[in-house]
Image (tube, rainbow, N blue to C red; front, top):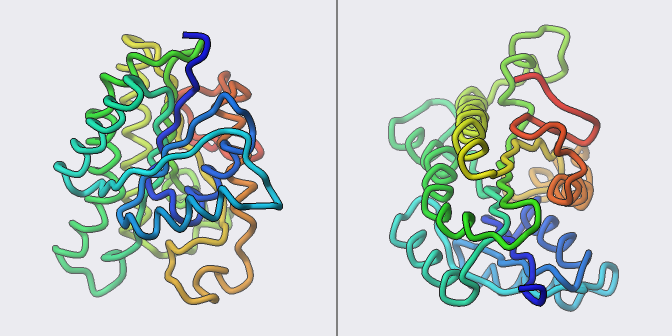
Length: 259
């Protein structure tokens, strides 16, 4: 048991926050194994190869890849079988995959379904599917679950005219992240109490990402986006117990957000 590695699975790990988090974790310890989950196996393989050959942030741990589309139950089930077969347990689930597609006006029912399917239903079904493997976590402090959320999903920010996030539209996206935050609260009340899981919503901040689109201006948010490696370090800190006093809460780089 002592020779087994702490195992992390990150959805949407081929770019943005997911990629940076995978890289940060893999660079931290030879005792860490990171499973990059990507809807596109080609994009996932490119990301894995880039991380492995990085000279700016050399890795110490190990990496593997799984095809996983969080909007497809068969894909989720297949990923569970692969992780179970190769490892027999999972220590950390990071629900990072997200989209803004379908969240702009004029809204359509199909578009909104796509948005909520990825941002809310996907994480909920992922946690349900991987729960048996998380219950087998070998980590001394038990299983951790990270929901990569956004300050845009906080009611306290959306309803406060003095908050910088108050004027932002993105109605549907904000709704989806608010729903994801409620999932964190409810899951921590049940799985935290019954299974000892530690579940957090984490706001990564505004960082370079394909979430807003693939053009340089969209990725960089007009020059406002920061380095996603900062988000990776915040998430790693949570997973190494630095924020256990805020378990079940909505954490960010500098503290805890009000819901």
